[in-house]
Length: 294
Image 1: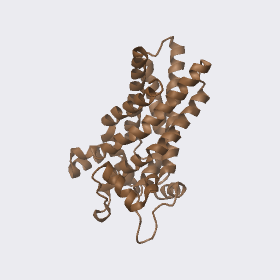
Image 2 (image 1 turned 30 degrees about the vertical axis):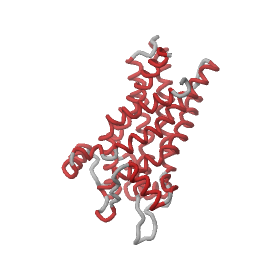
Image 3 (image 1 turned 45 degrees about the vertical axis):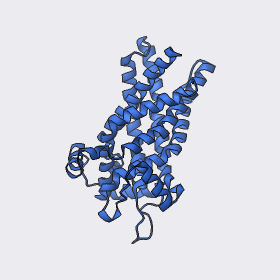
Image 4 (image 1 turned 180 degrees about the horizontal axis):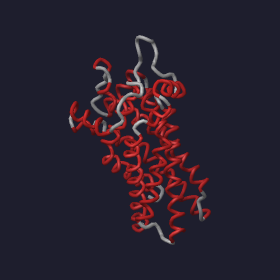
């Protein structure tokens, strides 16, 4: 149970956070898609985008793809949080301290493995969120996670579930480097400075710091990931719009401008930071409860 609980706690924390944050994630994806379609001229105002979604599709559409979002947490977050905590705890028990370098290594490792396992659910989520922004004839109309999974495998091949995995992996490594290691490092430094021991103020400040870093560093890769995962085969050109993450990056900068890689930052921050904070705080709380219980 001691080996399993870091994975259970990490996955459960991520799922609870996702239920709270899902509407913001939907708005973030729509802003990124509009920026691509309108070559950077679209609005990045989340209120306007939310009104467009609600007026055209209804309030419930803000939770469209929630099944895939939760499945992503079951695969991706369970893996990354569990691996990080397991490596952290093992190293700490053996050496009595975990340096920032080792925290960073554990974070990157957890993000890399978690992103590979979670990519199919992430791809399905992006496609379901992006579907209504496509022309009528190009919409996929997935009815749920299992329907999307089976159709992708039958229509495009099993390995298509890992389309866009390069930016997904890079984003996950960057996000985890900027989130997990800084959170634990900030807690240790603040505890030493104030002479405290992980009180709620320390954990809130540390999670807010980690949430901002995670959002700022990972948004460009999230932008590229969205474009690669939602793209459809173009019959006119006989190819996909983007050949690789490098090609996607070059075209995005050329058509939209470099700063548009951070388009919708406040919406993205409003999605990543609260999700990171809630996940990290829940993980800390549940871990302490588990330590008392055992």
